[in-house]
Amino acid sequence: MRTVALVYVALVAATPPTRAQSFGVGQPGRRPLLPRAREIALARSAAPPAVSDSATIYVLGDRDYEVAVRGSNGNACYVSRDWIESLEPHCFDPEGARTVLPLAMHRVALLHQGHTLAEADREIADGLASGRFILPRRPVMSYMMSAEQRLVGDDGKAVGRWRPHLMLYVPYITAAELGLGTTPDLKAAMVVDGEKPLANVMIIVRDFAQPADTAN
Image 1 (tube, rainbow, N blue to C red):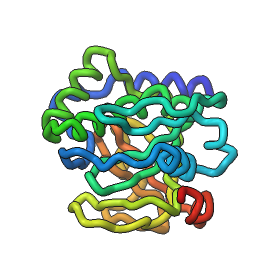
Image 2 (cartoon, rainbow, N blue to C red):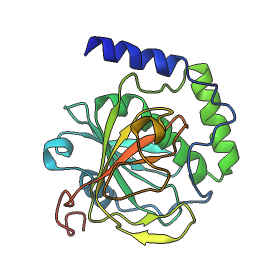
Image 3 (cartoon, helix red, strand yellow):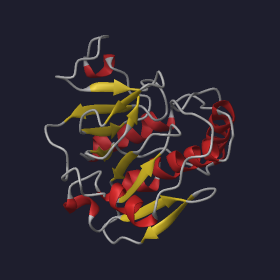
Image 4 (cartoon, helix red, strand yellow):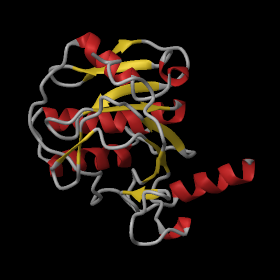
């Protein structure tokens, strides 16, 4: 396992510059703020209680995310808001909480403040180049299993709560490296944002983490 970890670190260290990279979809504009208790519950609903009950919880404020609950297990959860009307409860393992989450929250905060998508991507790329943000040193497990999620597709169209899924972040991974075809298949894993810093392997799971009324 140590050899695998060292190879992974070497691959991340050798990845191409991120200045011209896109970090995913998004929409500039102020997000409607949620009641604090509801947002905390929504964030926790992203993962099974074994993951989220003792996690640190972040909520969106006037300009940025802030800690609402200080956890003890190293995991962290928040409600991502890539689109103005989307609600994307999401929990990360400790490595993801240290690396992917700060980057993702800051990107949403910039869009929330009215920055364009290009401006947000440029600031994140500059942050990676300067060391303000870092990519994970091992694959990161994240959870999007909330029955309360309101997702928006890459085309900007609402898709509702869609399906519960796990996301394994592996920077710059491609479908070809996993032996996957060019056509996404929900019966298999799918690579999202392949060849990008926040590339991840999406795996559909059978059940939502908690009942649909958990966050109400």
